[in-house]
Amino acid sequence: MRDFSKEEILHVLKTAKKMEDGKFSDLLNGKIMASLFFEPSTRTRLSFESSMNSLGGRVIGFSDPKQSSSVKGESLQDAIKITEGYCDVIVMRHYLEGAAKLAAESANIPIINAGDGANQHPTQTFLDLYTILKFKGKLDGLTVGFLGDLKYGRTVHSLAYALSYFNVNMVFIAPESLEMPSNDLKELKDKKINCKEVESLNPVIKDLDVIYATRIQKERFSDSLEYEKVKDAFILDKSILKNAKDELIILHPLPRVNELNYDLDDTDNAVYFDQAKNGIPVRKALLALVLGKIQ
Ligand code: CP
Image (tube, rainbow, N blue to C red; front, side, top):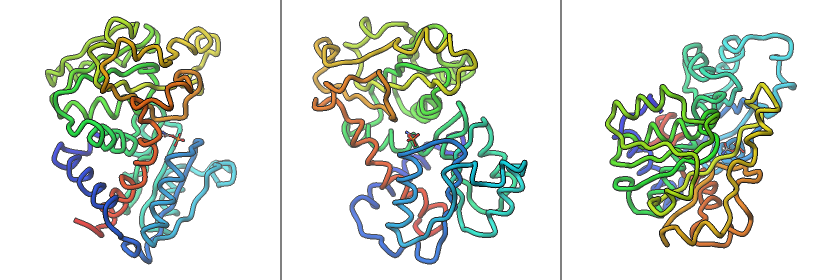
């Protein structure tokens, strides 16, 4: 997210709205996107591939790195230098923090970070912002509660950074072992963002306009016992709404495990399925912008 100014973020969101409202079926005719997923994905990969296809482009790539020459020991830099000869843009998810930056330094074509380890997930952030804007009509003047795995949750790190451009209060709700990383917190405080850290949702729920719930990221724990201790730290169900604002919206990047009870799904507060759908206009916009097909 640090590659984007506030103006650029707003421009991407405006372009996503154009994509949602208009017909651009030939915009990326003749363009090829390589989709390199070194980690599992449903939403990010499929919505990027669907977006590229809908805009008239084509897709190559892999969703299982075992089918790539990385298993023979090929370096990421070499894989990127080779792949860029076959396509116009690379969308990459990788388990290592900083992998997207390394790829971008090795490439002469655009690299889109589809998630790098526990670090960042910027395209998710654009669809999170798009969803908040759609349901709240604004990004300023909101109190946003981030809940769950704030240590390993890359979507949280990206979204908190992006929201720091706006007049937003942030509440970080997590068990002590999964708190927001101190460098992210310091960065927010240096930007004079009003931040609060708590371990329980109950005392703060009445203040929240947005809950951004997250999955406890089992795959990032080196010690499975540590995961067992916190895996059910938060389980939200309909009963939380009793003390919440009527207009509270609940977002989640998905997939969920136990943290969102299915009884929330039919409430007006649950917007996580709309949020996932917004991956299409947002990723269409990002592809069209990085390929220079829309201003
Ligand atoms: N939100 C998200 O990144 O989902 P996937 O892991 O399924 O892509």
